[in-house]
Image 1: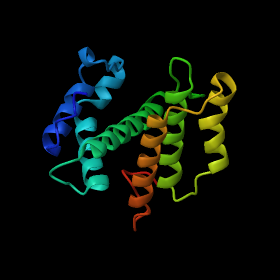
Image 2 (image 1 turned 90 degrees about the horizontal axis):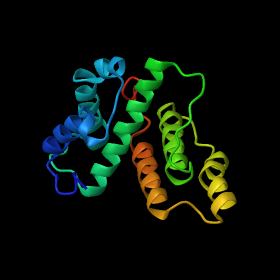
Image 3 (image 1 turned 30 degrees about the vertical axis):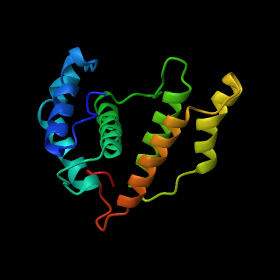
Amino acid sequence: GVYQELDEADVFIEQLGDHLGDESTGYYFPPHAKKEFFPQFVEKLLAQIHETFFENKKRLSYLERLDFVQLAYHFIELKLIELIKPTYLALTSKDALDIGATSSVGLVALLSIARGKKLDYEMVQTILFGPTLMQRERVIHPERFDRLCALIRLMEEKFPREDGLLLGIK
């Protein structure tokens, strides 16, 4: 992918911020949301993720960059929820199986772990494995599962903070 060789953290973070704000790279934010996100919010968010989760390391491994992008996505989702105030929320994909399930669990994990609560692993297993077993008679794609596990491990490693806050979440 586009970030495969960008192990210098500053270059990677700048590129990610640029890509998030550029519709030609596949990201779209409606005008009212774009006004809220760019450039200040996204710049601060990416800097805070770098500091909080990666201790301002100068170089990030490929897997760390994948975790970074996933964290950015989840915090952007939270900001969108704050802006839009939806009654219902569904993180989905083409068939709502692999990507939708891991995205949903990733967001729930972030919210739970950030608040010092234990994940309900029975609920996690139901979301992750129930739909794919029922519809496709298989488990979710191993790569998606591995990425989710790595992200949850990273979040659990960085919590709890002494002040109980992570990026303003209490």
